[in-house]
Image 1 (tube, rainbow, N blue to C red):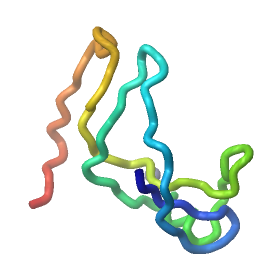
Image 2 (cartoon, rainbow, N blue to C red):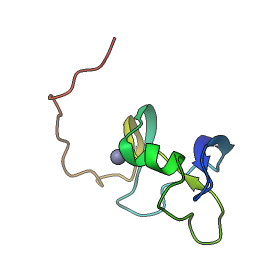
Image 3 (spheres, protein in one colour):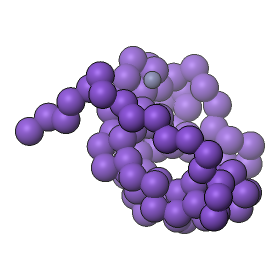
Length: 91
Ligand SMILES: [Zn+2]
């Protein structure tokens, strides 16, 4: 799968390939990302940043505000679904 990554402390970003995540815990869900927003934190990371890459890695994958569809979960792991009606999709 594709991701946007930056090297902390340096400006800019690039598209990278990452392994597709798997569901490993009973309360994990797998989400197919449909849309992603860019927020102020992402912009800050792309201009030099303040965060560190995960231990043992040099790059930090950005993007944490997304809209998607749950495509996999363990049976009976979802106890409640909340309908969000305050946002409307763009055409
Ligand atoms: Zn954010």
